[in-house]
Length: 187
Picture 1 (tube, one colour):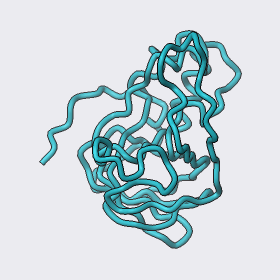
Picture 2 (tube, one colour):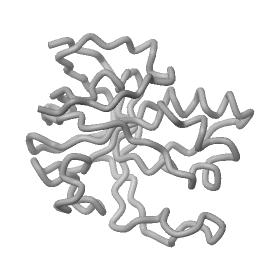
Picture 3 (cartoon, one colour):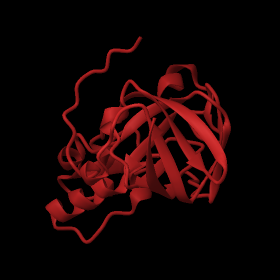
């Protein structure tokens, strides 16, 4: 296993969907939490989140994104910065190249807990990004939207320093790069 020091910058838990329908109507009023820690349950997701225990989302119950990708998008669009939580990803990391984790089992070690995940597929952005981030964000986020994962083990994850354990080599310097997205071949 390759081990990389990362930082968990933000955690997002939302009991409902904020981005549905037409963007011109604006996002739904949904109570979104940005806690200091979350409880992850194997095969179900993050306790309290909209995808927790939903059969249709088991392989995509937890989403990760690299903040470097959002920072690069903001720069390319001439925007000062984005609120990382507006992308609606559950775990915002700094220092993590995520694209190579598609199709891989990996772990996030945080505050003494180790939670294992399976990187299921890229988390493609939706057209809502143009409305909530900035015009052009939908296109700029392609290849930088993070990954959707299935939790393989249970545990609590928290903000702050963490370790990303990967079976494949990662390049943290590529965390902001646009990934070449190919469909993964799942076993």
